[in-house]
Length: 170
Figure (cartoon, rainbow, N blue to C red):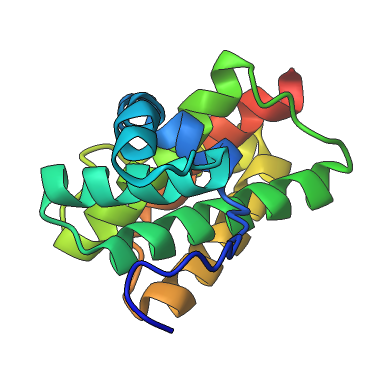
């Protein structure tokens, strides 16, 4: 097909809810870009396409490859699914604790990639007080370590479990 063809291909973006939370400013910019894109091309992009543009914007601002940003987003989505499965309830995506948990997971991925350490070890305390949250956090960290092909620092488990406990208590 020649360049600039009108193919009307729709690419679904299953990570839109995650992108809106993790990269809200970038997503807002992508939505604002719709009118410029429409003016230049005659096409109005969908929310799904705006999500992909938001990933590119984030990538440009963070020096992180789009593929790495997408991989992190997918890992976070998997982690949230693990939590929902173990809690046997759907979490309220608009809730502050949900947003905090997603942000924590994102920065946990970043810390794991860069080797940055968490300076507090909550594991013993959390294991004693919140064993269910600790068990879920350990599952998530094991999954993340496998997918990232990097070891997750032990201190991350307890720190993540605190965020999971907030979801349990909600």
